[in-house]
Length: 221
Image 1 (tube, rainbow, N blue to C red):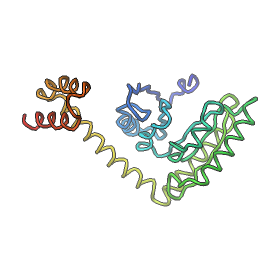
Image 2: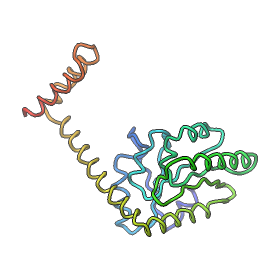
Image 3: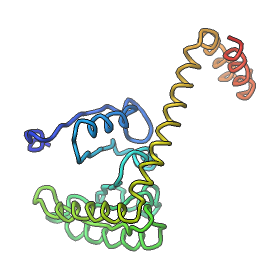
Image 4: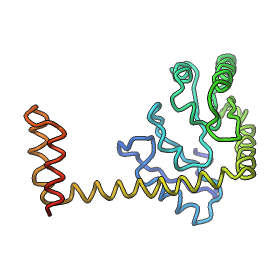
């Protein structure tokens, strides 16, 4: 990152997730759109690495690369599938020194796993690779894999289709977000929500009845 930050054609923008589920910040989609409009042709979205719940980013990128590390529980995560089945490629990092053999063994195991999973992207076979940032080994192969994916999906039409689906998902997400904000900003709801939450927590009011009360207050405004 120190070297990358000195590159004049690169722009880096940290975006704290603020507890947002999915490993990305709430306004990540808007940030991507702004960067594209400004002319950046390659945009890398790094998530906070939340593991099994890291699925939101899949709905906003063209290529989903999952980074894994040997000896950190990632082997079990791979066996349990989780986000592995959403990946367009798997990359075992820190494949250098004494870790090289373990990294290669993990890559082979991941390739076996991918063989039994439904491809994350139609017409594309996800690969498991290794790399070493310290020795700059394997990075070119990862980039070539991404470019091959781009060519394949653009030729079969899925690249454009995925972006259309993502636009619709973005629309629905913003509608939900707007409705939630509008709901809780309503004076009648804001004035009653704490008391109703207390009753629910104490077991004095069923959750379904609490929801009904809040929506009645909102709809009566």
